[in-house]
Length: 623
Image (cartoon, rainbow, N blue to C red; front, side, top):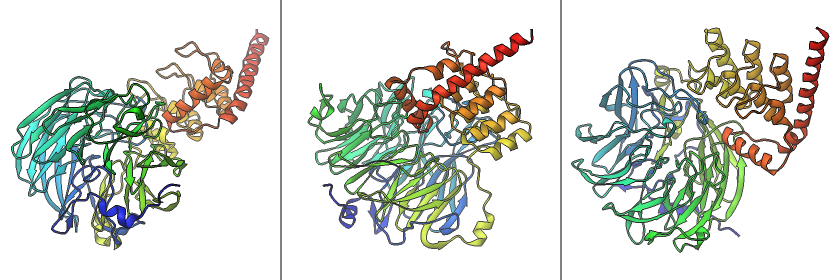
């Protein structure tokens, strides 16, 4: 029987720093990297764009860095361009999307706002110039969250530099960072952390990865270690355990821990997923490390005990290691970091599922609960007052009762793209959306004068991106683009994906029909050689297959593997094919009904064969 949570006891142990009775939120996901706040009766469980909103302000430019708080000051970063560029947009891109450097001169900005009023206290421009690296279509040039020790503010723009200010905005020192090529142009994203006079920065990339320590007062480099890593973006954890303080950094090849002097303490091969994004956290005397790329079958979570030394990779099972308390092989998410609240570890999956495990033992409390059928998630969960909060990319926050039983108690809409993790201090929740910063507090209502000054919210579908509209199934946006002169067969970036292909890939048949009605070429293939008919057949959409063939799609056209749409749908059903559907479903944020597919595939194959035979008969009759 699993332990019941006694929140009043457990949450008094939450590592929220308190100085002179004032709470602070000093880094990405809070002091211990766990996004758990102290209980407060005036923290809200319900809100929208006006209700329980103490204040809201417009933010210029673009950034997914999270707000941090010291005392009555809120710090945030953004990047503004002199020219219009493609806006970041939601979803899983799987290698698609334009990745050109932003046009025009950019301004890397640091803001300080008053926590109680939202008024700007100061603004500083850390860097000015043209971007030197491409930008992933979902990301921004302000991805890293700042950190503070209460004396100084440390701001990292990972592909530009590290900047230090006092809390009144005076620049104290800066360090340039040489930009490096990253996998799929994701850019830098790991946030800095500060501890005991040192600022720690990790920059894993495809060229020369490293971890370094800088003197917090002067910016002098204290030490630097090269890292044989390429595919990781996790923010490091300063793990203060019963034996020592260490810097824990996950990696695709090895999970590692360093001393405060930069010496390697321990490492192990966790066979991590292809992309390592979730950040480690500490609770119950242990450190938790995870990774879960959607296309990988191994998506592990490890609970590590203190005191390890050297290579602790076991020869057999992971739990054979005396320093790995428990291990789960398929219990991690892709983008969101996990949250430990009381005795329970919660995993929020990008596709809108939640699982719960006992944080001390790894035993499953409940399996995947789907609470958001269509929304996707990047921000990590946060918790307080006995509730877990899951913020979707659409700005919809699901409030879920913490504990053994899964229960949704509220859904709160901000109706705008959200990627950043919120900050929680005292009786206030700070949520950054695509264009705004909201301060939420129970019993507040947004002042009508302040509301009138706010600019319109930005659509989560960029105003110039028909491919994102097709991916999202946003028919109104598709019509607007086409009416505005965007080509219905426009190809996206080097991959050459068309809007029709994106609509079919992401299960929006109505959008596909709209595009065909507006003249989409049903014979165009993507980078893998698959035509829209290949995709519709594979996904078992019989109605769409018929419509595509009516429009001239050829069931005998071969893809880059030499397979026709008829070949794909005629394959014998077996465990390997089931596994293929499961892997594709994870990659595309789709859930397939395997029984239905097993039944409908022969029907689609039969239709294709009859159509091909009828076409041959018509051709012969016309001779």
